[in-house]
Length: 170
Image (tube, rainbow, N blue to C red):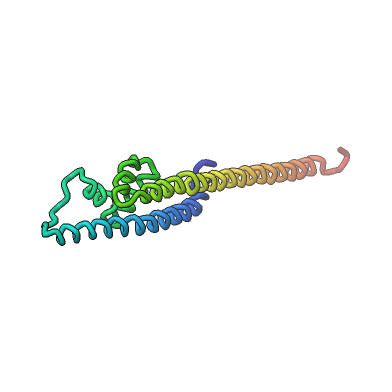
């Protein structure tokens, strides 16, 4: 009962925490998607300027990996969320980002570090704190109920003894 009540009482905190995480992932996705799309667009333009017709990137190439991980917002958000939740190893996307500029893997590593060490740890702490408070409130409610029941039993016993000792001689 206490566990269920703790989970129910923490859903509001969980919802706000998930919204915060969604906003962070969305913001970072804009940054990485823009960088990748811009770089690949420039690469396509350079190929056209050289008279080559850009075709699909070969599977496994850096360009292909960049498109798979950061080619559109949905893919970027998926990659970024899975990177912080253990869904994928974040080394592959970071290595692909290194082909754009040497700084991008470090930006990616800062994002992963910030989300894991700051955001997710704080969210876990808040969630646990809320669950503990809920359990304490539940315990306090049980104590209050026991005291109320005790007072009711005392009143019933006093009433019973008063009726038994109707003449008052003890």
